[in-house]
Length: 97
Image (cartoon, rainbow, N blue to C red; front, side):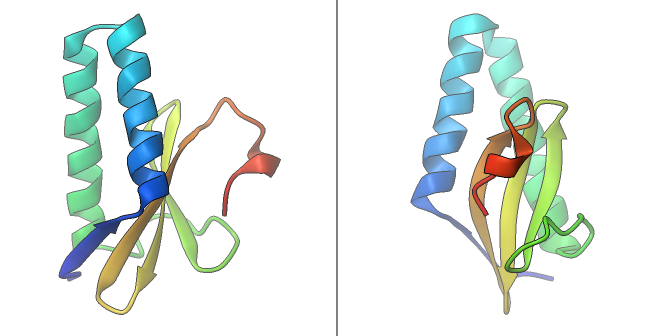
């Protein structure tokens, strides 16, 4: 089990971007659902850090939060680094790994 989760500045910014988009275009209910799903996935990653597929580079893994959003993270020792929230509708070749 992982003991520590660190949100990188890039993860914080991309998470805020998703929240802002949902708040402007959907509803508070959808914002709440996204936050809840994100917390559930992070908790699952803490228990089973290698449960999600490798993203193909530098030990980065990706967890699907919604159909449109992936969470990219890296496991290092007993720490999980949340790297970025990726919009799956974007070009996968430009994924920030």
